[in-house]
Image (cartoon, rainbow, N blue to C red; front, side, top):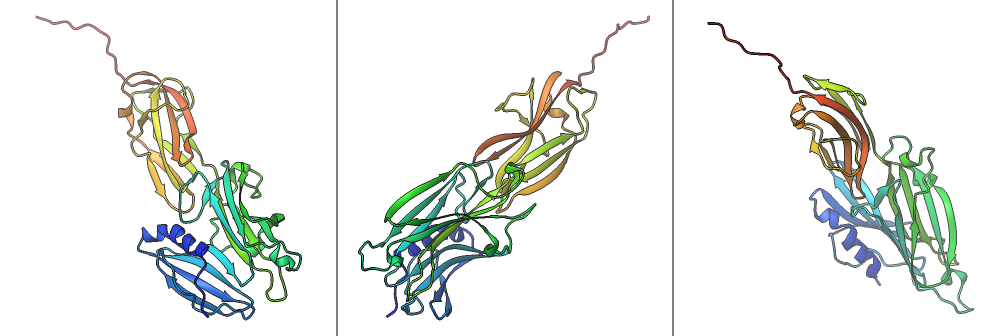
Length: 340
């Protein structure tokens, strides 16, 4: 008899494919992998709904993988997986962060994230095998390396950070103040953390992944302003500036602003023309901007501050600043006489 996809997987499809429904270049499919034969079958699916599995569930069970594919640029994402069997416990893993991006969970290297776990179907009777009494919960980390984006990485090379057994049904939430992805500069790590629930091997089926999700970790942005120095006096004309912006968060708006006076965190100012950048992307971005002819932002002489600020789902951060004196007003001193 064919079996309906588990309710957990249907809900996951409806939630994570929401991003696909918003863009015509995304398509979704579920891959069914049979055990112990290894036979695989792919079935196209809509952004939400349910349907019968393509193959009958064998005694060894089957794993269902939810994929979404972006056609431009071509890239595939494994969104979730679920192992189904006659006497196999059920498990779900959900990742949460301060970034509401709904395609692949992500956060920044200096921000917390949360893992919601639910286990159901565990038994406690003496006569049932160990595989029915508990599951394994694993945490892996994997660095993308300098400038890496996670494209085509080998996830079998991930580092196992921790492993515990869960022997009670029900939900639980784990919170992590910072990522454990390896890197000398903790603000600049980029990679992913993966959390998985596995069944134990028994006489019918090998150890299998019940659920797995990962969250991407992106570096903290930084920047610099060159072409003007601290305390410099601007007279008659403004110098050409170079703004260097590194590791801008995938969902961010970054710009240079000026305001009268010395530096003050959180101060709103005038945006410098030609300095604003907005990104809605899946990976961080770096840019170098050349800014000139911005003298109109100064409406009076005196001490001014220029800052580079970036707005992300985590708030507003200052990347660089410089204070200088402005004296652009031309003053003429003298007398006017007439000759008759």
